[in-house]
Length: 404
Ligand SMILES: [Zn+2]
Ligand SMILES: [Zn+2]
Image (cartoon, rainbow, N blue to C red; front, top):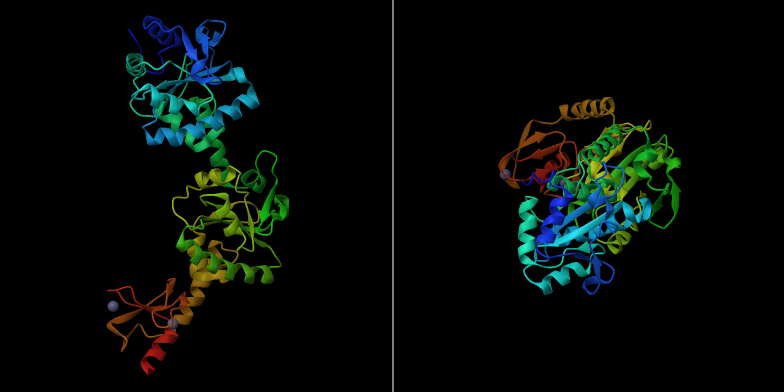
């Protein structure tokens, strides 16, 4: 009787191969031309399962060329495969493709971009193996012969989120990674958040490298945005205004670090050349790590970090849009002060006005970022705003329209 996916061991895999008369695997190096004899000396760990994290990790990859998520996942897995084998040793990780392609031509095309081994193409064999390992989704990654490994969905998800750091795909590794993220989210160490693998600098729009250590003790804004996103362009203008003001008024104790979600390096270069602040280098995986750590689902976004490294908040976008440089150093007490100040200013304004330019009554609203429908300029704090439609006027523009 065959057990559930995690317990199905390597001997079940070999038994099925043997019963279908398959005594070899295809090699990634010479592709379908070269056949590797199936023997215990080539794959000793298939015969002697090792506990996780100690010994080799052998995975079956169920994947197909017709499946779009598989085609997206393959390059991620290739990168992981090469990175892991380079850093911990070639014998530590092997992957075996079980292709769910419909014919051999498609299989070859799919396998062409993979550096690992493959089970020879055979529809009946595919079916038996998918059934044995309860493959429900594609792509699926199943670790052979060890306990404590993640189930197939979790393994793929963990690789998508963490790349090579996900190795060896165990529950223990997942917990470790989540704990590291949580520690970073709590803040405290700027270098741990922004540096990676020996890179201890950030880049500027003019190609200068700046040590991360120079940022320690400053208030930092991590700006997440992309060149393809129109609201980001709008927000960058607001952030620039606040930035220039703060650079001169706070003796440079404020800095912004751009975390790009641009779709290519060219886009990134174009984007950063227009920014007065620093950035995580485009090729660095820290960009993805920061998006994951702060759960960035929408851009633009701004995460504010206090001089001691603790996280002030992830709502920096609203803070900058509403209050600009005035809100510095962005902590709760300063925001409360700013709001009290603005409330005072509003005391002199009427609660609502009728306006010849607009059919509805306009009500006084505080703490709103908007574009004035009369002068088309950006407004913040006080607006005379319509409940019914998206219509806003600067308090000063109410008088101007009334006079017009
Ligand atoms: Zn206006
Ligand atoms: Zn209206």
